[in-house]
Length: 139
View 1 (cartoon, helix red, strand yellow):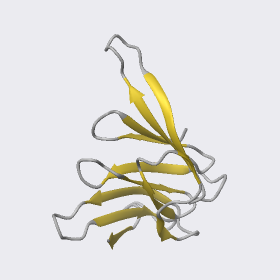
View 2 (cartoon, rainbow, N blue to C red):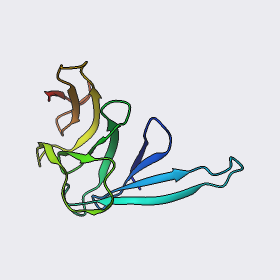
View 3 (cartoon, one colour):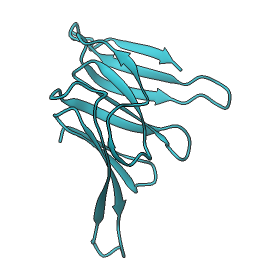
View 4 (tube, rainbow, N blue to C red):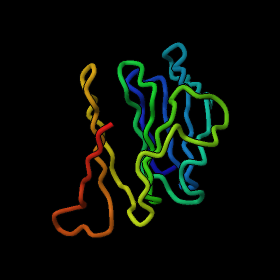
């Protein structure tokens, strides 16, 4: 396990692993007496390079958060359907692919109705005391 992220409802969890996979979980907190029942919804693979660690995932797009971003050392940001089921071999698309550029952090500012959203991507190898460069992508 290299990272994990909850959706806003607290009922879904995305876990990232060093093999380049994302595992989506449905979490049932039961009767509130400490009995938690996780159920694997899907395993996402194929978007990232196999055997290369992922550094994060993030649910987004409106109140339903129907999309998921994942990123990692392979320099890719992948876009997934966050409600998919089973074993998924390909993302909806790869938004960023820079093999020489490990991606350490990603965040999204969602546009208002009819406006574009912006994804901020930070990473690379040329950092320094100021930090890593950040690139912005509109979609």
